[in-house]
Length: 115
Image (cartoon, rainbow, N blue to C red; front, side, top):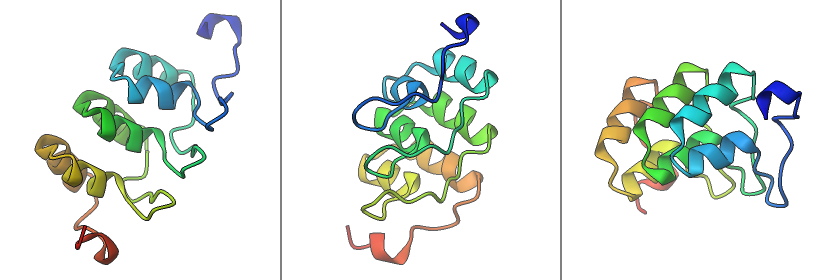
């Protein structure tokens, strides 16, 4: 696919591109390849979620690390105000929580603490 000049930023009806889908399905090798082909890590779907949000939801720490290493914003909020750290906390992904804290989000946003 990538060798045939496919538009890696093309999105489906929910606004998710190939990177979102790879991250959401825990396909870290695919995430890595897409990032190597300059698929933007900051694109948002129709819920305001980035591929990093999707990787957190999938519980895939290797995809989370790859996305963070590629400059994905650990502080990006979806349209409900949830950052990747908030989602990781809600889903009890302690390893991912630590990864995100190490990457720059120092605490949970005030609006999310009472969740």
